[in-house]
Length: 111
Length: 108
Image (cartoon, rainbow over all chains, first blue to last red; front, side, top):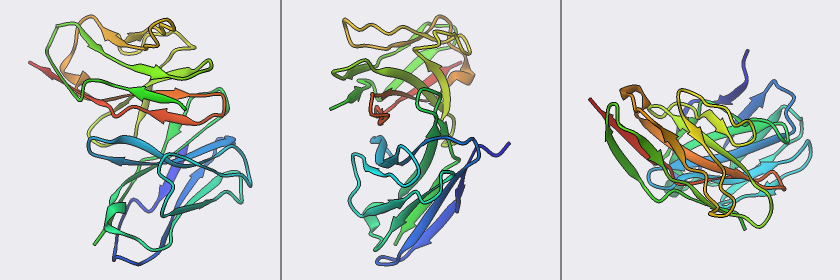
């Protein structure tokens, strides 16, 4: 009964390093989302996908790239990490008209 | 463009008092509205969907299209209701947008 799983749970990066966050869902959902959560800012949408092979920009896409090569996975990449990208990242997935389920979050610190 | 506004960052009530968390939205089409709850920086959990019109943990919310609001209400707050609450809107393009959240504290 995994639901939405994010890997890793915690990560510390140095400025300029790159990394990829993995989101995996086992519910055969079409729609997947990446958010960042910052104090006082709520959840802001980075990118989302409405199906395998498709991606779209959200509110704060700069500095991030995504890929949805397989329906169950949605990858979030940081090519050159900056301290402003220190945040908690949440992945979510859903059917088109169904409830949206969230992962447990990834706490990323960029030093 | 779609937008969700939660005017209160913080809301503090006493146990047993009624509570109302406000949510206003801006969207040109027919939106789908949600309330999510987050306890102590855990993952977000769905509390309510306006489509289902159900009551969860004593909370209810009614979509008012005239006032473009989806306020969350509970007649008698409990200490375990203390959490961060987010209102969210999903548009016809399946883009899901959240408000900034309201931190509810229920005092004993």
